[in-house]
Each structure stands twice: as structure tokens, then as C-alpha cells.
Image: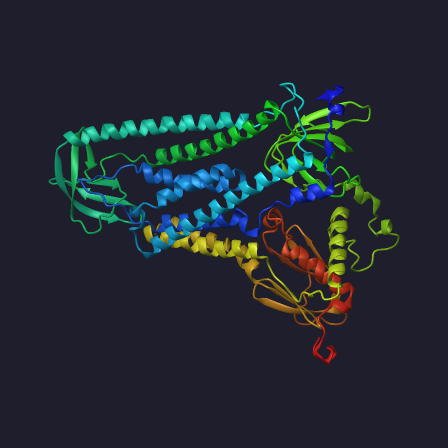
Length: 610
């Protein structure tokens, strides 16, 4: 919305300078406080607890039916995983509720494996609580630092028209309410049907039937009534392996009910109701919080600061007022309908915390103000533009004329990278050269996946067998046997993450992929690239006959060494860390360019050992 109101220009807002922005953005949690850790721990614990849970004991005196309490507690874990990442307020409340539920002594009455799984769940819940509380504390610190940078100056944010105002959380609130209503309707229908079965069971005559067969894996019980040859099949939850007879009920109409489990099989409807209810609660809570944060900007005066802002790649980036080159974005957010725009003066009205809302008034060239509200939460730093500028590639010929000459082996002209990716890679190499040449710097000699990636891979190796053995214990159907190769294939990626290694020596690099290692001399290496989760070591064509460890592709050319599935790069970036393979590519390229950075042979070391 464009306005010519002079009131915006008259607001005595202070500029948000680089020292203040650095102090504001520095209020970030450490690596331990990333929600991925407790989320993975919760997934492992809950899946292991479900796989090792014992069968319920069902008797005519205490018949089994829908276990609403246990089912609701189990389903609450899945919204907790979402809230850990996006809504710490709800994560704290739900985490406290689940910790209280886990304090029930009856939960710890299972075997050793179940108790260990429950202990993992409790550890994940406590870790998640600490992460969420830490995030809330840091957001409070960000608000305080934002107010201090504003110098106590507040102003009412411009009021946007209803059509120009982003409807923050409205869609999620409506969809979530509809899901909750559907879940409530399904729950009522299940409860009513259970009551009808309960009334029929109380008045029906009972007889003892002989157990013909019990399939524990499939949960099927087969019985035969006295004087009949017909067999009756029941889908059961309890354990009937040591019983020769069971009590059955005959309510009439040809119906036969199991006295220990007289209620109809409504597990599918119950699961659907719980899933809809869980998703509905998540949608309603996140929608209400987003709508409340957006409405808070319109209720009263909020802190205001003078900044620089631009719209690029579908994201609005905010810079410090003295960052006239637009080099380091302080924060970014999704605009409502801003078109691409260059760096301009702006007023920012906000509560000043990551995950919050803001309203930006940008001054245009003709002196008017363009006002727009955020259509998404505030995020620290800049968001990379996923759309590559293909027009930049037109500046270079296929033979590298854009660089002033023909392409030579190893200049990156045929490495499959775009111009933007080459520039970013070259910047990382220059940073690595500067850091490694610094006096007293510890030079790297080996590279492998990051700790975050290793944790994710180890978790996969723990989860897949636990789930598989849990299912095999209760079912040996052909579906499980068919799914076993699929599960093993899913472990190929984690195995690659765990096993790739690159070690630097005086003679070259030793590269291990899976269980195969090869030695690559320094003179064969041209460079290293990292793009799309793949680490590539580019090689010069070998002269003379091929030796062991050298390969040809289908065209007869010597293959470069590629290491795919080298880690969870996106998670590393989300955690504020550089992907390990990306750092390895820059440091290896630095060693290729500057031989003095390579590990020295024993005979080349000084006599004093330094």
C-alpha cells in the first residue's frame, strides 16, 4: 500500500547500526539447543516403545476396548515434534504435560527394553523442554535489545487496509477448526457404538467356545462353538496363546462377541480421529499465535527503527542503516506482495524477535512511502535465492571466452556449476586460504561428515532395525518379508554418510567411499567442488596406461571422484553451520593451489619437531 502521509517522515526513529544489529543477531542458541536433537531422540524412543509394548491383558471381567488415554498421549508426541521447531510456547506446555504422563508408574511396568525406550522418551522430552525454554529466553533478549537500539522510541504502525493486510494464521485456524470438528464427530460416533456394544454384552447369554487357532502375529483368534462345526474369526488385541477355551457372548441375530473384547473393531476410525485431532490442534494453535502476533502490531505503539531494505528473490531483506552496500542482511521475511526493489531507506515497526511479525514502510524515489506487512515470521540472516540467474551464464562462451581465454583443465568451466555457484565456491576457497595461511593455524588433515549428519545417520541405523524387529515379533506376513529389502536399501544413504573419509598426506589424498579406498596424488588433482549434496574431486587425465583405482566412464574419459550422500547439508545450514563437505571442498582446493599448506613429509619437518 502506497501512502504520502508526512507522519512517517516525522517519526524521530533512530538508525539501526551495525553494532546493534550484530548484538541483536548474536542472541542465538548454541548447537545443543537445536530442536533436531530432541526430535530425533523422541522419534527413536516412541517408535521403540510402540514396538516393544506388551499385548494388553483382556478378560471377561476387564474387557478391552479403545484405549483413549494411551492413544491420545501417544498422538501428542507428533505435534510436539512440530512445536519444537516452530512454536516453543506450545512445546513447553505440551512437554510438561507429556512428562507428567510419563511419571505414571504403570507406564514403567514393562520389560527391560520397554523401560529403556521410555527412558529415551523422557530424556527427549527433558531435552526438548530445555531447548524450548532457551529459545524463549533468547527471544526475550532479542526484544530487549531491539528496544534498547530504538532508544525507547515507539510509534503506532501504519494501518493497512483489509485487502492489503496479510491474513496471518486465518487459513490455518479455519482448517484446524474443521479438522477438530471432524475428529470430535468421529470420537462421538465411536463412543456411541461402544456403548451400544456394552449394553448388548450385559444382556447376552455367555458360553465357552473352544480355541481352534491363535495367530499372534496377525492378531487373529479362531474359535468353535459347542455343537457347531462353523468357525468364528475375531481380530483381537490380547494374548490368547495359553488358552484352550474362551468365553463368547450370543446377543442374537447370528452375532457372536468375544467376552474379553466385546467391542467392534473401530481402530481405523479411532486412528483417523486422533490424527485429525492432532493436526487440527497444531493448525489452530499456530494460526492463533500468528494472528495474535500480527494483531499486536496494530494494538498500540511498538518500537521503530530506521533501516535499509530490499526485495530479492521473493524475500524482503533488512540491513543495518549504515550497511549502504547491502552486504550483510540482518533478517529476512516473506513479504505480502512486494515487487523486487533495490536497497532503500525504510522504517521498521516490529516486536523485535525471531519468529515474530513486522511492518515495513519503504521510502520510494518520489518521496512516497510503500507500506507492507510480513506474510511470514522473521528469520535471522539472508535467505539464498533458489532461482539461479541464467542470464549470467550468457556472459561466458562454451570455451570460456568470458574469462578472457580458452578453458583449461581445472578452471571449472565444465564442472556443471553456475556462475553464481562458482563465485560462492571461490569466495569459500579464498576464506580457507586466508585462514590456513594465518600464523599458528591448525591445518586440517582429514575430513568426514559433520556431527549433526553422523547423529542423523546413527539414528537411522537405530530406528530401522528397531521398527523391523518390533514388527517381525508380532507379524511374519509376506508384507514384512517383502519390506525388509526396502528397509535395507534405505540404510544405504546413512551408511555412505558414516563411511566417507578424505585424508591428506604428503603424497596426496586418500579417499574412502563406502568400503573402497584409493590414493590420489596431488599432481593429479585439479580442484574440489561441492554442489547439490555431492562432493567432487576433479582430476587431470592420467598419462600412460591405467593403474589400479583409475576408472573410465562410458565416453572413455577419466572419471572424477564423486562422493554423494556426504551429509545432511540443509540441516547443517539450518543449525547455522557450514556443511562439512562444503568446507572440505574449499580446504582441499586451497591445498591444491598452495603446496605449502599440505602435510609435510617426516624428512621435511624441522629438527625441533615444529
